[in-house]
Image (cartoon, rainbow, N blue to C red):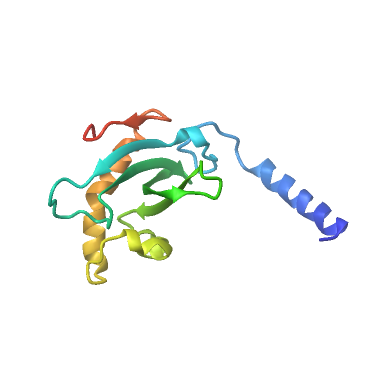
Length: 150
């Protein structure tokens, strides 16, 4: 990239920044989430529970505001990164929106229970977890809610 291109990009970005309202409220469309904004809850499959949408028996339900609306996810620790300290996380986006629930999880579909490829069943299995996740987003930023509290 040459100097002229960088100058043009800087100018365009400064114009865009001037048109975006500054806001500290996480529910605003242009708020950029911070690490300590997320809320978490441990969840796990109970006995031979029916309607558990994941292939693993436990994980973390998480919620953070993204683009002004709650983003609900399921996290599973899967060993460690190369430094042997940082946990490696796999995620599933939980949503009742077909685009998010199906296409948003194409790369991590091994964490989602196979319901014969039936997207309607997947959406119905996600529904209660999505609603719980939205309630989780109503908790104070940085909360870690105990199992079964929501």
